[in-house]
Length: 65
Image 1: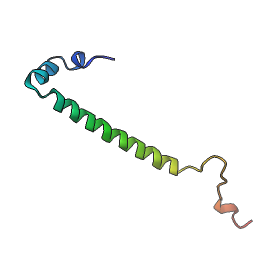
Image 2 (image 1 turned 90 degrees about the vertical axis):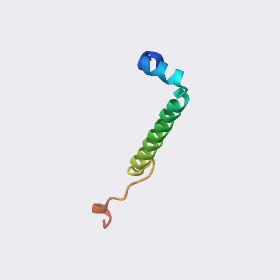
Image 3 (image 1 turned 180 degrees about the horizontal axis):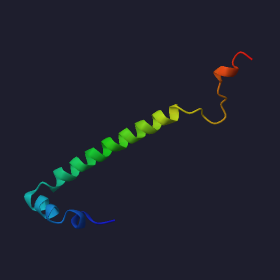
Image 4 (image 1 turned 45 degrees about the horizontal axis):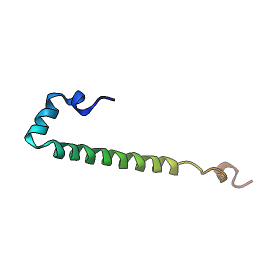
């Protein structure tokens, strides 16, 4: 994994010397947290579409038999 300096090069230096590095990193952190929350929500919804292990699924085509 590349370091922040290797990835951003001059941007890192500019942010650091202008005093905006912490705000930039905080923004990146907020974005990552939102993405993580969306990922977790999507995973929960996907799990809700499946029958949990050990539970039988009532099939409509056999319900009257």
